[in-house]
Image (cartoon, rainbow, N blue to C red):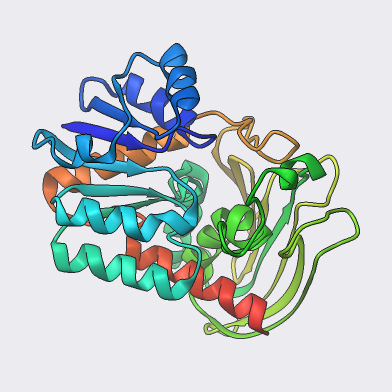
Length: 328
């Protein structure tokens, strides 16, 4: 399959590295940015053809899929054009800067009959998939509590980047930009929230438009209780963490490794003790392994006509959850 990359900023690295390793399944036809310096910097790192017009990609009938890696507020218009051209889309999170625009984007792809995959790579971690499986099969028993803790660090220089942390470009702060990955996994484990009570603020640590600290208490539809704590003001940053209490076991998912402690004394581990990364000052300090799994799943979805693990419809769940956290 011939694919194209749209957007050569911070997010492109793990995608390009993944595609180098998947060259037997996908060929990068084009990598587009309107910025000449960005094209030059990308070309110095990766052996892919570049172009300076989106039309080059849209008019190339050999291109079957496009990865859209641009800022959130640009997604709807680019995806509309890709859908009109009949290109399948792999979209960096979040779907868009607002849930209304995200819903329109998902519906645009549905009407066009194209596959829409969303880059929420934490869902592909083997540790996360094992916990989802254990709950779905009933092995853990009834869920009593499900909580998420996202304690990251971003220096002020991160938010001094034009548009970073603004509603106009990014659509939000720590929830939509960083915690969205962990909250997506939390929803896959716990289902939908029934009731949300929360506080959010911009802490004294940062000068920015949107929230960098959120504390919430939840009741899930299953009856389980939970907590969400998310911030980018927790120096020096720690791996994201999910905690579960269930009828037959307690489980934790920290970074790339899950531990299930069964009431009968057994201890089960899933995933590997690895460098999850992205918790500290460099948001791109993480391995690209899970981006490669996103690509493998997306390519298989296009080839077979099934939905990706994280489809547009799935991603809308976490958008609505974030809206509830901010509105409560």
